[in-house]
Length: 288
Length: 264
Image 1 (cartoon, rainbow over the protein chains, first blue to last red):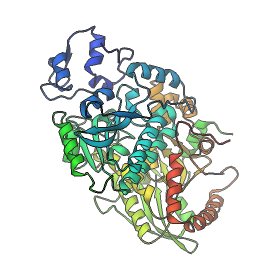
Image 2 (spheres, each protein chain N blue to C red):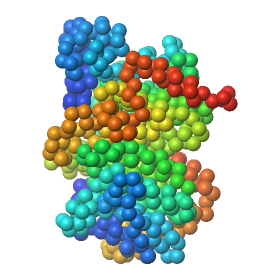
Image 3 (spheres, each protein chain N blue to C red):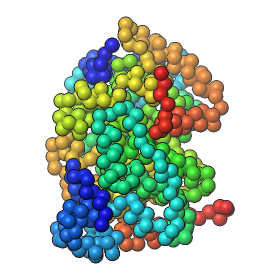
Image 4 (cartoon, each protein chain N blue to C red):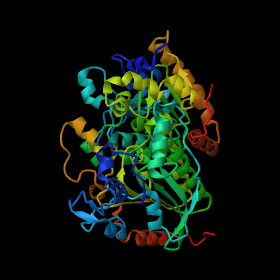
């Protein structure tokens, strides 16, 4: 049994809505089902695991980064990069050290993104996958640094980048330096793109704030998982600002396709195949 | 010496000159150009062509408006996606005609509303970050009041970023930070302290190259000071080899990492 999530109560709707079965399992002491927030039915955990955390109604549960890497890359192909980078409390923000400690315990990871190389359906690529149970995937200097290094590596080796986003945005606890990561990662994306390389972004629930306003929206191809919340401002903030309830489906992946900001919905069934096909279609004849 | 929160108050103070004030105070011959050619003209961002001495330049400024009527017209200086797209259109125009770009940043943040989301607020900001990183003319950004998060950064990817002594720059507003940390927006004073958002903090973290002193100076004096500073800096930047300029711009932002050194 995994213990992730055991140490941390959900603080808000975003965190609650995306509970992984692992969290629920720890909470309910091995109760073998999980309530689906979409169809409100209890789903057997075994079935859910077999179905890549997708309910029979189509609801996509949140996935941890390692699970996702297992799910999307060819077995044994993933090779992690910069796994040891750890955040510093640069601006001495109250409670940050403690929060980092909790995040490390809750997620079993050192930071909110995992980067590396691997193959998808036989095609080599660089991969970044954000981790929802590490401070809601927020971007501080380490997340920015790891993603920048990944794009720089991909540029140097003429490799495509496939990136899975899940994030509440820039990490408040690192102050302005978190904001600077938006510009830094965008610069790295730009250089990778100028060299003629492919970047596919896959937006998963939720992708908001500074991530949407930087590398999430900078892909050559932008895919999104069904029902994923994607936006700049969070729905609660908008509701507070305009003092109105938001319409059903607002800021969901399907809404972004309708508005022209996302290329395609990519359900987990067929997601790996779709990525493999896209990578193959962009394979360079002259590449070494 | 002001506290962090006193600086926040000074940056937001009534009567503090806004973006248009800086444009009129520093440049001559300003011709405003409107619209993003896609959706609308965003009144929260003003842009156009002007002269810095004899040199034609493109100037872009966030504008909050002075009185209540103006503030409403300017959406309190909170841009919609079309504002960022207008800014980008003017920057591309500057690139075509080899004009340097000068941006004046003053916003509590990008507007947050239904329309802004429908038209891709995040995408508009992201596109500016990418495009400004590779724009083939010099860019100088000056933070003149509020530097509110991504909405401010979308005009502040530049070769040099300067900041007025009483401006602030932050990843989140002190009020937003306080309500997350202590569930109480009224603790904004403490939050302002924690966020390290003052001009001195920015200088120490190398987020800005220069702090423009305000103490004991009138705004016309500040405009004159900025005018000669801009002139000298642009002369230097324009004489640089383009690839060196772009490389320095990339490295300027590349340095902000977990191992970053602070400047004393």
